[in-house]
Length: 265
Image (cartoon, rainbow, N blue to C red):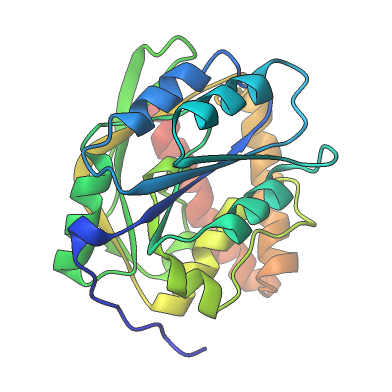
C-alpha cells in the first residue's frame, strides 16, 4: 500500500468535518451541541445522521440545524447500525480534516484548535489525544493517557483510542477508500483506525486531555469484557487473517492490557 504524504494546510483555514452518528440520544444532545458550538476553531461543519431514533433526537437535531447552517442533519431510511451511519456521514463530508464525535461524548473548547496545530507541527495525517472517562451523569471517573505515537501493528496489541479523540486528513480516507465495515456489528471503528494508520504509516498522540468519553450501560461490565475478548479473537482470525500462533501472540498483549486497565482503575 502506498503511504499517504502529509499535506500542509494553514490551520486557521482548515474546514473540519465533524462526524456523528445518532441513535436515541436526546438526553445528551444539548451538551454535545454546546461542546461543538463553543469550539475556538470555528471553521467546522457538523454532519449528523440519525439512525431512526424512536425518541426526540431527530427533532432536536433539526432545531440545531435551523439555528446554525454549519450543522447538517440527515436521517437513514431504516435503522442501519453504526457502520452504515458513519459511512453516510463521511459521504457528506467536505472538510480538510475529519473529526469523530460520538453523540454522548464531549470536547474541550480548545480541542480542534490545539489538535490542528499539533497535526501541522508534527506533519501528521492521523492524530489523537488523551481523554477522560465520565459516568452517564458527566461525573469524572479517571484520565486515560495515550502513547505518543504508534504504527498499525501496535493496534493489534491494544486500542488506546477514544473515537472522539481522533482527527484525520480527509484526503487519506478518500484516496484509500477507507470505510467502516458494514458486516461487523462491533469494532468497526477499530478496523477503520487500523486501515488509516496503515495507509499513512504512523499516528501521533497529544498528551493533552481534550475530550470526555461517557461510560454508559455495560461498558465496564465483566460480561461485556468477555464478549469483547471473543470479538477481538474473531477479528484476528477473520479480518486480519492472522495465523493461530500470531493470533495467540497478539491476544496475550490484548489480555494483559485489559487486566492492567482493570487493576489500575
